[in-house]
Length: 64
Image 1 (cartoon, rainbow, N blue to C red):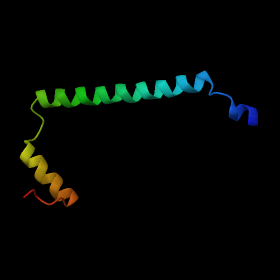
Image 2 (image 1 turned 180 degrees about the vertical axis):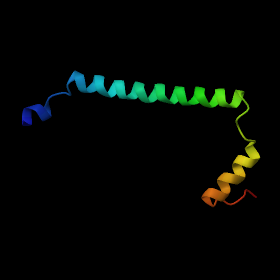
Image 3 (image 1 turned 135 degrees about the horizontal axis):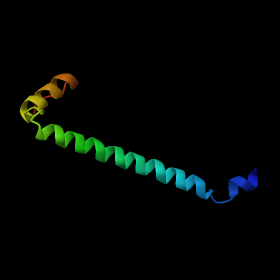
Image 4 (image 1 turned 120 degrees about the vertical axis):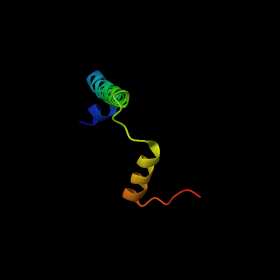
């Protein structure tokens, strides 16, 4: 047990972590693409309305 803790990590662990990182990266890209497609379809809201909604939802004071 102690030897296994002192030995370097197994290559499978690094590979698994790399796969998880790639999945996260690809999911982010997919989300960004979906958002851009939604924007292209005109489904977004103007930034001033979005900011007001966020300020109200999270009790953010307006900028000076």
